[in-house]
Image 1 (cartoon, one colour):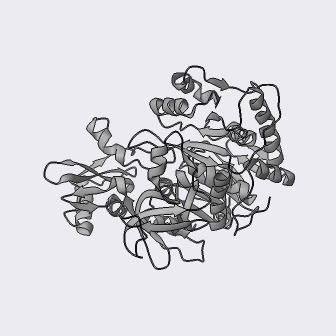
Image 2 (cartoon, rainbow, N blue to C red; image 1 turned 120 degrees about the vertical axis):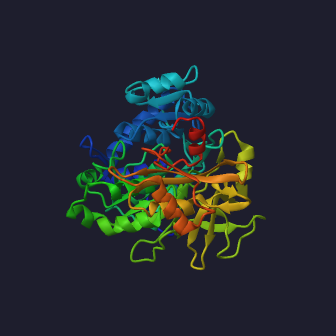
Image 3 (cartoon, one colour; image 1 turned 180 degrees about the horizontal axis):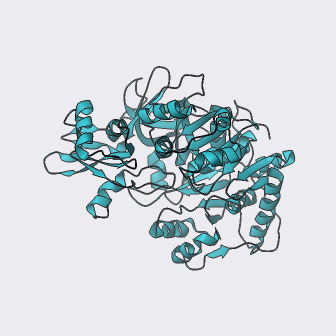
Length: 500
């Protein structure tokens, strides 16, 4: 298969893995275990495992749960499921027992690939009759079904912060398109090697990193989890040319003690940030300290990750914006779901080959998220006359104080402007007088002497009294989802339950 920047990928994941196997180049390196996988080796193992899954009686399109952290075994299990024509159902290991149990029951899988470290979690959450597949525990090898690009490939559950998680279904076609949008935006080639520190049970790790490498013909360095102290050493060991992270990781690296070697700096073309807004001061500080450009992007589970990206240097990167559309169309919708004028705030919508098929077993939610062939993101933003989108918040996260809408991100930006703030999130809490009041939670760098009044005054100086938080809580760490994205909506719940 050939990577063509102007044309979305054709075929199936099986087709692309077969094509990469012909090159027999390196597919994955694992710095923690000094192990590696070549494309040919990966294809052969995935194919044999897929044939064994057919031998177990699993049919084309059936869900197969994957309960694995990042690592060699998980990568092979994922590709085997794709290769066999089954629906790879990624289980969020950070979701908690009830959410895991819900996903395992809802997906309808009879079998699950279970890493040894997750056996207790599986036993506690698996529905009756679901069987764990362990190494060598497969059926007699059988023939594989014929696949089409429209066949189901992936099932991934949303975080479910405001209700039951929704199961996002992607076809082979939309899954490959997710890797393609990344490859196009970042000019990825077979010479590139990405760094995957985000979990592959999150859409960023799976589509941006894994599918980006498959489509571009490059390779990937993968570690089990992000470590501030080990990141730069692992990047040097894996000889990576780019990395994909989230804003909290950018902030932790900025405030950490570790430094990249000169060779690592020179080898890195860029880092990309996604999953939530990157504070301007954090991005500027990172680039000034490490001399590595950060490309801010935006993506959704429903769009196989990326929908927007800033251009690579020397293209125009507009700090504070996740950029322009690559491989898909993006527009801003007014309240009546028509296109909003440039510069006017509305809901961000997207259409293109990377858009999901449906929410599994949830036709009402599927219908509600589409207007025609445009997928509604639930994010608020505006588009400038150059086509750059500026995200202003999420519809569900808006703080409505005295009838006025306050975007939490505006308060986050001010808090991140203090050099000691590593993590920050503003949120609304019920208030008799105003309906909602503004509060915030932050974590500080080790050894900081900052007090709450310092941050309150900073907000008053920059935002005025109305938008300034009534309270700011100091926490060792803010609650996060699997990718490291701060879960703002959980703060009020956790504080109300006196957990924090």
